[in-house]
Image (cartoon, rainbow, N blue to C red; front, side, top):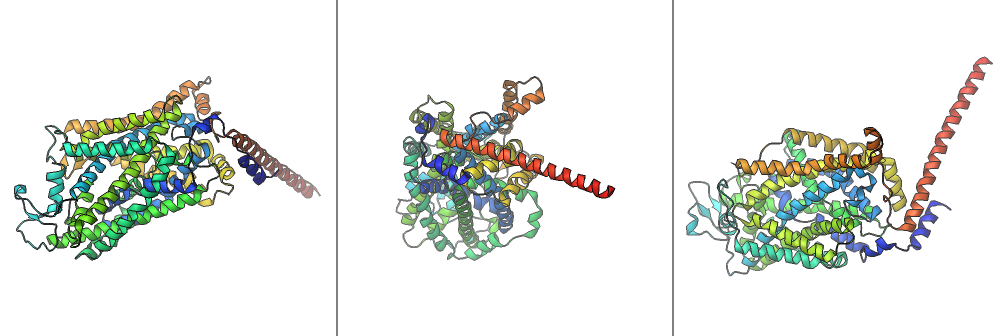
Length: 603
């Protein structure tokens, strides 16, 4: 029986075992695609990409970002999707392929938790703006007397002039009214704002209502979570490019400064942005794909999502830089002097653009922040679901609804610290130390564990069996050489350049810096700690023998469906024997050639 016939027979007669019956699956392949879009196309595109490009020379950032996308982003994205679909397991359980690397999965779960804590606070601010949008006059469109600073209204046709550099009312509203930001946190973080705390609670309640019903309900919600934001984003783009001065901002964004291509920091930021934008290295992709049918066309979906993600980032970048160009024109300054970089950029520039709408700005503001909220919920749901899946896969006795409740309650309690006057300071610290470098570093071990330890050929054999299509040279060369090498190079550079961070040009207190380094250490220590533990539990006489045993796949590695697993094992044995036969044939042919040469010389 040929390979195609074997796969068809096994899949058509599939009878799930007990574990498969307990695990849910998508109602259709389109739900998986929509879910991936909802998590990968999110605040990383609308919030993080524009200000990352803003901080790294505008248009010059696009070149390394696109290069990184093809050499690191797409290969890592497809790798994670394949791992989840092949095993039908969470981001922790997949490491049965190489038990000594389980620390990678644990470290990624830790990074995911840190992201969960601060991501929800962005939704709280979004919800605050959404509710404020129902006022007769948008509250960020005009200045207040109590601000006591050079303020320029964000509303249309504001032409005031000032002796010193002014600030837009949208920026001052965010800093002084919404988050009540401290200029210095050396004396404490202050008390949480009750309105933001309530908004935070509503965000987590929304998340709980989605994830408590499982993946099938989340799949239905993904249609709305993935499609609705594009309608509003395209509308905002059209409005942004028609603002006065917008062309200057767009040119600043798209015109590359080629000298920046030699700046390794720009390349490092491109990798970090790519990871956050695609949700690589955090677990949601593995979790989502683990609910796929074994023969689902994941290659098609991976190409669609990664391409759409990039297009969305470019649209968001053009939109916000058009707005920045208008702000610069309004304040009579250069584009690179407009608004400080940071997480508040989306809550300053976007509201400023909306305030300039002469027709129904309140309606558009409601639609925009509803879009922003939907984007954020899509990512928050995915990350929370990942944690639930990890725990329920690891401990079968756990009830998913109870774990969902504990996850959301814990996320809410941890998120309260971000709605204090020092919240943005803390967010910047946790994002830098607890997420960025941890995700980046563990991704290097992830791809090395699959391509180098388990073996590229072994992995490609598994994927070819599952997809019934050969693995192209592009994927092979990226997984085995290009992606690991680039990740290693950028990681070494980032560690060499690692230093204490600042917020808006201001230093953190020593205790805050210590906490940041501690967060980083906890994330990094997971891999060596669990590596040594696994080697210890796989003791085999000597240390080296124990390492080799701990790096071999355990008996649970492979497809979870028993019929498919049986067929897969037969397939693996067959290709192993075929390769041995080919090697033997080559050796035999070489022997006879040498023998013929010897007799030819004697003759």
